[in-house]
Length: 164
Image (cartoon, rainbow, N blue to C red; front, side):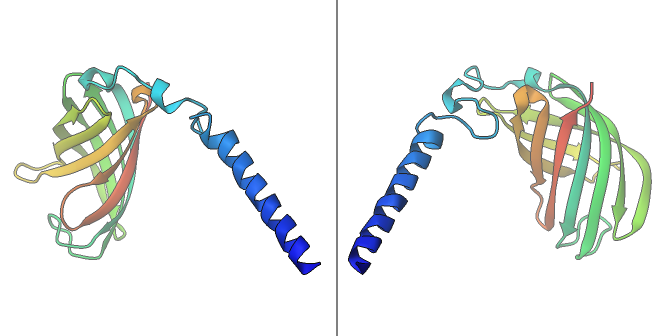
């Protein structure tokens, strides 16, 4: 009897595995968006994919010295910026660094977009000679970018969402 129960359990497990693989993987569809992977943006991305005003939310920690901030600084930043579709970005940010709030500060920079819809930028957050970098991925046809800071000593991630 124990052998039959074990055999039936294995059959049920195999059947469930097969059905889940058929239902989700067999279609090639992303379970979140419902879009087939090979149908999403067959044309790829360009600088023009990113144009308009975006709101940003970032949070994380500096694990090394970053500008005037010592290791261990906790970071929370909000920003609003404009990407011009030609590789330039500008806007205003405000942040909290371990509870010390920075007033609204302008920033300027440049960005690049690769055909595989990856994104990178280089920006000056308010002072000459101080430059930071992001690297991320573009989603929702340019309406959203998920990114990380790509500078040594940073563990900060964020999201840009198109505002208008």
